[in-house]
Length: 119
Image (cartoon, rainbow, N blue to C red; front, top):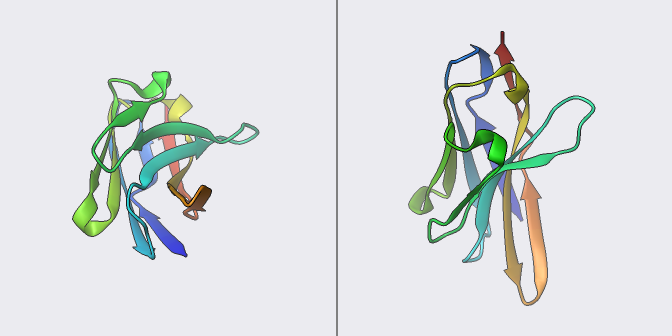
């Protein structure tokens, strides 16, 4: 099993910045993808950004140019640097780790951290 612990959420004014962190522990096999998703009230959970073990990244169009995902493989930690925050970025942000092993997809989630952007 994999445990994910997120930190760094909070309340920030529009235009401000926050940095989220997520530490993964437990049995993690190689080639895993780490990412961040978010879910606003009444909406589905959507991908914000993801990063592979080799550093390949993928971003939602709405955050391109404002958010940066990075990871420290030695620490099993993924970060999300969020700049120029907007009220529409308000949501619960979830850390995700997933990997494929012997044809089975393993998918793990953190408990979520609230990000609130005031106008």
